[in-house]
Image 1 (cartoon, one colour):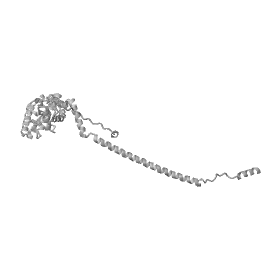
Image 2 (cartoon, helix red, strand yellow):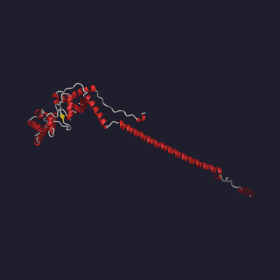
Image 3 (cartoon, helix red, strand yellow):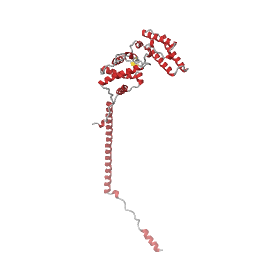
Length: 324
């Protein structure tokens, strides 16, 4: 028992092995090392700040360069881009080229084909760059219907009211009475004595004939083709009567507003000078319209033989950045 106690006492009497005290942070070498680390950190911070400024300046210069290139491109487009007027001129030139080669039948009969070609042919005539004169048949020219400047109206079948060729379905006592009244109002228009009462009476007569034709069609006394023929004729009569209300109505009947000229050059000059336009063809005048269109083609061909007809196309816009 004594032995065990003594051994235990000796063991417990030994000191605990604590680590040596830390005094490295207080040595002169460690202080200098810390100061160097602080200075290195400050230098790195300043270097990073300068690099950031340099990169920011590069970004600002890139923005300015982008703005300059954008402005250069806008100026280039502004100088080379076609204006609205140039685009319209190009579109009109393409339309003229098509009409000189392959017009639609309705474009000829409505007069729109000749109306589109009129300024072009007038330019050729004024410049004197056309070939052999293309003469016109006076009888065929009388079949051409024209309208005044800006009115869009024409006298239609009233060109010679005493010789109007009425559709068979409309003929009868009422039609004869109306025909005599139309002859009178046209004569009074030429004399300047037309009054509102007789003008209104003629309009009512046209409406009555139209309603009668419609009633016959509904009752199946006439077919649809006959009714449509009658309707178109009476609408032409009504359009001619609308002309009588205009101050210049007499010119439509005394030849003041008419297609006149011995050849295409004279016709084009007269039409352009008076501001006249070709109106749709009346029934029976289709051949005259196609003949006039053919004469226009011959006249244009003579001009093309001298100068040629060219359609200006839009130039390609190149990238100014690639140009040196």
